[in-house]
Amino acid sequence: MTVAPECPLTPPATPEPLLWHPRPLTARGAGSGIEWAPPRPEVPGDGQGTLPPSLVVNLAQDFQCFAQGLLWAHRHRMRILLAPDPESASALLRSLSLDAPSLLLSQEASTSATPRLVAFLTPPSSPDPDRKRKNPLPRGQIALWSSGTTQSPGLHFKSWTQLLESADAVGRRLGIRRFSHVLSTVPPYHLYGLEHGLFMPWRAGVSLYRKRLLFPPDIRAAATLGHCALLVTTPFHLRALVESGLTVAGLGLIVCSTAPLSTALARESEKRFKTPVVEVYGSTETGALATRRTVREENWHLLDHVKLARQGKRPCIAWRRQGTTRFLDDEVEALDSTHLRLLGRRQDIVKVAGRRASLAALNEALLGIPGVRSGAFYHPRERETRGEPERLVAFVVAPGLPPESILVQLRQRIDGPFLPRPLVVVEEIPHHPTGKISQATLAGLYREHLAQPHDSAAH
Amino acid sequence: MTTKKTAASALTDWQREIAAVLVQAVKLRRLPDQIDPQEPLFGERGLGLDSIDALELSLALSKRYGIQIQEDRAESQEIFRNLSQLSLYVAQNRTR
Image (cartoon, rainbow over all chains, first blue to last red):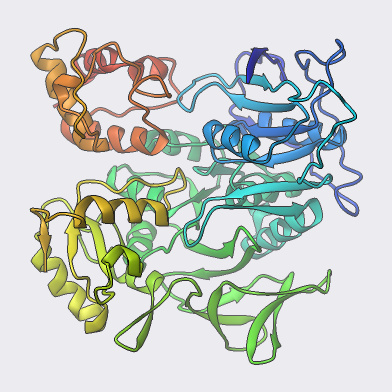
């Protein structure tokens, strides 16, 4: 891959505006009629004999740069791919064997103070333009790379209509127009960040903070830029914000998703930041589907663009306007047409000694123990246990908390068959940037800690 | 890990202390003395830290030294450049 010189997609703005006040984004049909034409970036090699790029991988963490890159790609009928980081994007492009040149739009580094777009141009692998392989990415849709929390990572395709529809539905539910601005700890190239951190405020013409926020003091400073801020975040970032001990004024609502939020953390956050915490239920496959106020509600209230339907005995989600239906990857119980109870991820349902439990529910029980900072249950595959009975194991980060006392507390929260054998105390569990723990990470921890005896393992 | 990496230059006592905080905060598979003070903390060529690590490290520094790291300040890029810069910043800005 050739690294091209810097690509100035946006003119350098001094002083850099922290808040971006977008004109409301409108769309008719599948992304047509989008207003506001961003300036065309000077693409290195473009118009100088080489083929124009056909694919944009947008990795910008600055929401305005990202939005401009997205619209620019859409207007030029380029395929759009969103990937979690440059390394994954490069690997993905290679695995797709794309023979057309591709363009990656990215900021220089996550800690860069000034957003700057850098373009990487991949040259065509074949000099013969007639020998084009079929590009597996459809035009007019946004391809998203999902992280693989519960299954193997994979590509998902979303039309602009689908994305905007769910963003609008969340906006209506949360009353987006009452907020002065939106802050996000989730980058815009993640579906949750795209829907809630970018499209939701953009559609309503509500300001958004340009940078993806990370450090608690930055969140505190950004929250007071308007009269009432909405924070889009994850359980991981929310826990860090609580642990920082900082007082954050100016928050009108906290929205949380990507991993189960424990009631304990939700309660602590509401108390500390004096604001409701609303959890969003959704997935890369479906987008946002439902919300709940975690401290008060066990059941989920569906967003108004979808309803519950039934195919055979299984409940499914029906999109009101498109008329399409889809089974969920989760085990759900339909309470009425707009409320559901989540029983667990379908892939999450584990069977031990003939009894079934949801890994998500078990994880929530583990994370709800005071002093537990991070952790997850893992169900080893048969080949990993070499035919031994498949009990669950759990990895936990809990500084200063003895494993025995974690087990005592777990026993009060979950049924005996699902108690971990063993519970392994580790110093850290690597997360995705969104705070998720992947199956691959857990499999790695299992190999590392349970292939040989470990000091801190307790039965 | 069985591979041993020797630091290009020896650490000062203060750098070693900060390196120990770093190693513990982000669970690096290295001893503090195996970190080169000039080695980039982020990116493929250095220690390979990411945004989650940055957040964990900032929390550890805030708890231990009362340092509040902010990205919206001009020096934030400098602080996380390498161990040498990080140690210098913590020494100059610690409140406990």
